[in-house]
Image (cartoon, rainbow, N blue to C red; front, side):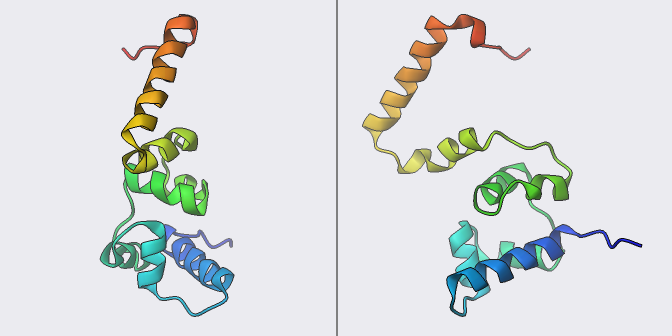
Length: 118
């Protein structure tokens, strides 16, 4: 019989792999900071008390890979878009404006590529 891996077991394994990759003793606190979450949240996930929702899964996928989606049973997001969304607040106003202008210009020039919802 094949043991089904739970999100909690997978997540703990990810922590141990990350810790080994740093070549030094790292705490759950350090792992949480690296992931961009608070320690209590990471503890809840690692102990199997709860699992991440969509937004948290997206952020985890950026750091730990797309296996997170399969383990949580949710369809994967486009990580290119997630990366933009996660890092958007750290971008300068000028850069955000340039990106928005590029998207608007592209959509005007290529309306066939735009698929409105609804």
